Length: 554
Image 1: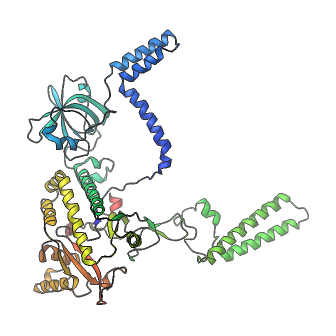
Image 2: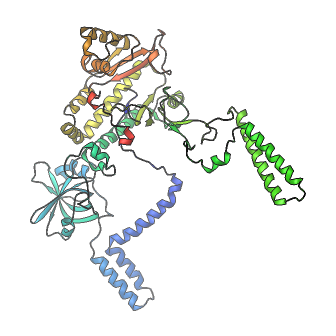
Image 3: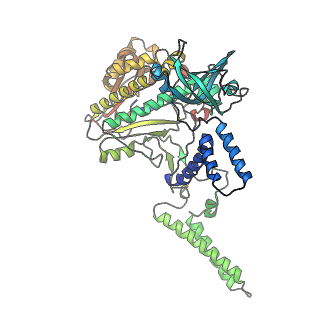
């Protein structure tokens, strides 16, 4: 459907946002550490420079000898590859035979190690492509002891010459001249092996699953779709706007929202500020508390022996209660009645995770023309199916001075652009999807790009469905279709996959089944709304499994 919702099942990640100003001390520290590390890792040259400086200083001969010994040791140590720039595996493989003879540095993680009598094959992958590069390390290599100890999952840096490969699966390989272990990995406990793991198993090792072919390919395709999205809208003059994730508005009107609060849950101890407030919003109770505190002050003052400290304490308590009473009264005057359950919450009212940035985008479109949002949205729908996620990223264009036909033109152009870009830039990833998940995926996507999208009004779609259902109503789960029916998945699927055999826009829906913000048409019965139905994108019934809430499961 459009607005396009990129509904990928993703890990339950947590992101930390830093202010640039807060980052300055950290950046300075990292720069200093990097400079110190670089001087150490470079080895010979920096050590010799330092030794020459100390040689001119008035130091004892023992210290001079020690400096000379340190310089000699550093000069003898091989230079580290950590500080050297690397060539990404994807770039290396893409260059192919054109890069023969080059000396490059590759850094990544070991996929496999095969040790022969006089050499070893090491497959290194850095995540930039589905395939890794094969490294050939001969036993005469000075760092062959490092190669001999490598295991799957270890992080390495390799310098070597790009040479032609005799293997059929690859045109080039890397003949190593130096192999450096960046991070070891225990072979006996590393859970990822060179075999196909189930998605259920990968959910149990969330910190390692990005290294698998499936998750890595999905993330590269998602990245390509994201880049193509911004490229498309930017090329058409759209302005990218960032809408709030925390909001008091229910854009969809469905009420299925996640509430955000700083108030304690039932049974939990209140935070200090909340505990101090007590029942501060109850004006009547506070008024009684003020009177009680005033009487306590009078009683202390009228006592035969006046305790000054006790009087001062009672006066402070009286003033505090008066301040609470004044605050509660002001809230009541401002429209926040006493007893408001959200009065002590962070925003002073109910707040939620956004279900859509559309309403904010509409206000920007009324000032900037054509805009779009692209960010996370949240739905608290209690539905455990493959079509419902608690969190997903949604793209929402808003266009000024346009109509429904132009909106459909824009949607069609967008979908074709991003799909074509992903097919072109992630060919290996789609080949892997075809091999292990869906053999017809690439063909369907190619047809989507090459075939014009059909367009049919809701009224015409209902007539087509009624005619088809009349042939054999028993084949349909929902055979009753008439004007005002909210089309089910089987209806949408038949329209896209059978009736038209292509992506199809269904437009001018009845106003009774669409959201309040849709524009009314002149007939008074329909609204200028459209859905884009794409063949092959409807999940099979077998996929609608009770997998639990997506975020929890992932």
